[in-house]
Length: 426
Image (cartoon, rainbow, N blue to C red; front, side, top):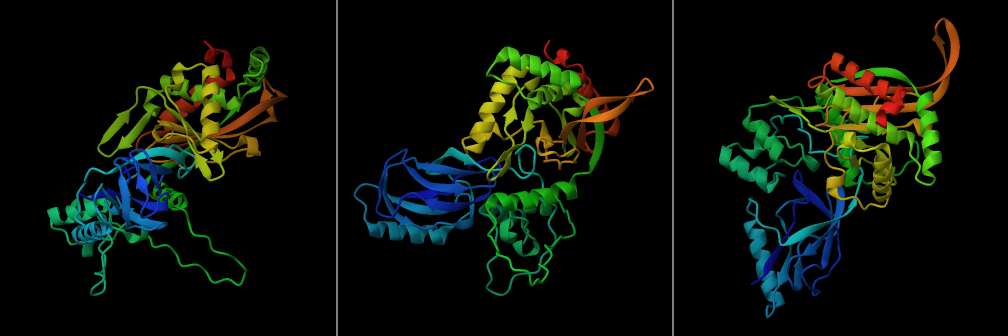
């Protein structure tokens, strides 16, 4: 009996993906474990491998196809004794059926090459999109773009798809649209403005899946999360001195300023646990440990590997772990669990000479800390002007989860640890 190879769900939030490249051709013999294709999701490009053995009888979804819903039959695998005509029959049956509903995939994912998340923050579960608005019915005979799950939900809830405006890629109706419609939500659509005509020479580049997700999540974050910002100057002369002495003792295993910052953030969250939270609709999630996401620049953009339970790790442990994560992030070798999650994020642009900036929160996280450049500045101490090395830090916080006073207490606790760095080594 022929085997249907279906688009697998490569992450808990994945509803559709791009079939970037087939690694096999029709007629190829495959065994369990052989690589079949590269699938591009909103978070990563992954290779999928065969779970069964047989011959590739028919490829139904060609290279480069975007917006392939999870569960879609993408190829037909022939078992021993079956012929090409069996693949044609199975392909026709799959096209005719196309029924929604989860089915066990015949391929399993192999994490391979994660790409950058949307903003300098953790790559976390996909944030809620703005509720859909009623949409005009498509032209007669036109096909409504909707995921299989959305179609099933529409049927179960008796909500016509024609009345829903999709928020997925290319206007596709997805699960969150149906949930919002069932709840009776409505919102004003924000159409993408048309390009302004220009006579300046230019070339157009097709957006990658990663860049599309970046654009959508940045818009959602600023439109749906009430940001507020608090800025503080931190004196880091003692920290720089301690770091120098520690590196002289360590030799080759150097610790960076960022390693101290990661630990200080985790310890500050331990001192101010009300800042280690996440808004979750009618609930508040209070985390019992600090998992710190750290933005790392790669050729494809930013990705945020996570130092888990950073408050219970030494600066040296954090340094070793961060070096490994950053190296594998730049070479595309991070596993999804190494960049998905996190309770707070750090974005450090100080090494690029940036003195101060405000980062965008990556939902569902409730805060991100922007780190500026450490530089010598004049300060007044005891009525006299002195020179000190100051570093400006800014927290962007979700006002639904963190009040101004809580944000200020966290920022001051963070400042205290950096200005008395020996307390971080105890």
